[in-house]
Length: 132
Length: 132
Length: 132
Image: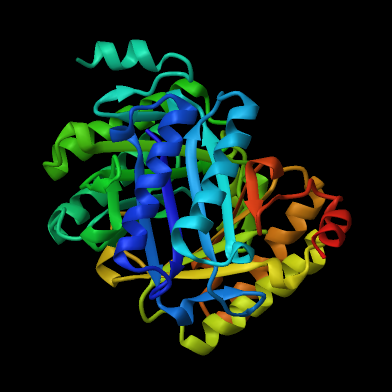
């Protein structure tokens, strides 16, 4: 259901670090937002260093943008963003100053996966069972 | 006006399949959201297979993220996401389980195209005529 | 804090034009939204010409998608999008008809940078001082 897009300059992370970060984000999202891990997507959008700017100069931020369904309790989203930011710093070795995590959302019924409209937060169980 | 970003691993779709999908999305959006087809943008963000994860493992999802103006009737957005998800499955041959379609929105007056603030949904006619 | 993602076909802009545009967006955002320039991120997502469609045909749009914190006064966001659209046309030489600027937002407390939850609009001063 969720999609996390990590944007960064090429060479910032090794393949191992990317794989580790994808697993961490998956584990955290699954635990906090009650979604089975296999529904969590994480992609890395690596750009040439000449195409990434911070402050108008070439930069090396690690930008993690997550899309989730609208309606999760606010404290869960706060926990989610906190845990992902902490994990990104620990797993990747990117300095904390350069890590930015942003969560965006839109209504569950504006999204379809596996041919079915996504469940509202809290209705995951019923949705998953019906998909059997 | 709208922008559809299709994120996928390299090799998932042929150039022909991408072109077909772009045309289908354009046709559907134009019909459902009352926008001339030439205002519909579709881009494909193909990433190395090592950079796309589902469930913390290398995966092959087809993620279609659309941006539209806030204010379309809810049933139109539901129809839009349904028709695009169906078309994506039919046109590309990607298994339905791997297709995720998400629509996001922001206010029309937070967007500018061709030098003019976008029209509210329902005001497309006037906007287009004034652009003549 | 903000992230601007410029999506375009390869070859649309020279490295110099990209650098100029990144600086312009940074200067504008900093002035309008009261954020120090070094917190403004601009990335260019250049795609093969075969992967960019307008109206279902290969196209050459310049799509600038900005993420900002929810809560900026509406007239500031209108000014922001206007100034960025104007700058993009002037700096890049891309025809005005092909330039699309969209601003999206989510709550400041759904984002973390440098290990700290982002400030609400208007609270930047306190946040920056506390980070010292």
